[in-house]
Length: 359
Image 1: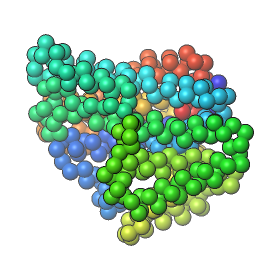
Image 2: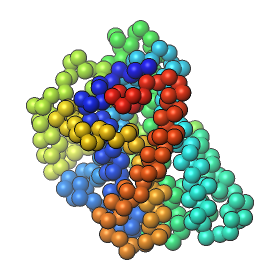
Image 3: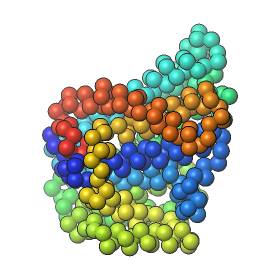
């Protein structure tokens, strides 16, 4: 089944996701070497964003745009849920098991028997539920510059899963969505911005019951996801063109020097991201030949970086560490795509030819 998305050779969705994954690796390289996360983008934007933060914005905006498109083309709510779960669950499960079985076994400083018997080891497997993530394993990476954490990147996945409920709401409306969904999304988005500006302290200090998600992060990521959704449902009204793109870029740059950077991030950055994603100006054929390994890069980069940090400590510069991390993670990401993600998607007869955007 083909998704209602543009031809892969005529856009740069996949390229942007690869770049976003590398952006996360760059900022994490600072943290995992024990340095402040003040990367180049953080300094250039006067603290408005960092590479990893901007990378997450890219992921959530693109996800909102494409997942909404997928929802509106799904024949049923169950079909939509199948597509979403098949895209994200198998690789996530494997990386959890990889951490316990491979990373933990190789790098733990306790005996193998102690490692197996320790309740902390088994508690790590609760992460398979998505909303009970644990970040440490017995005796693993305790001497690293950033001690203890096995895979800090996983913390955003539960938010992604939770946000899938927004397009699901579209499906539950059935034929009525054309009349009301634009307004519902617009109201949610506007209220989200108001909440961040008015109640940020409250949001930071509270979690969503059951899901155990921080309210601020949920609203923050939700705003970028919703912005992508809005730009899809309003695509017949809001065109992604070069002049508005340049204006948005100028507004965003000027906002670095004002108190309004937060509002600018939510309003103009999604447009900038989706213009780049949909414009043929930014399509590079050499990158187009690469399979969609961005999810695997995101999942495996952190444990690979921690492994490198355990082996080399702080003997590497940030730039060398980032490039080495990328090179070392690519094989894991490719294996994840080739033998986990793609086969599961094909099994449900989801069309996975490379000329189609993979959602």
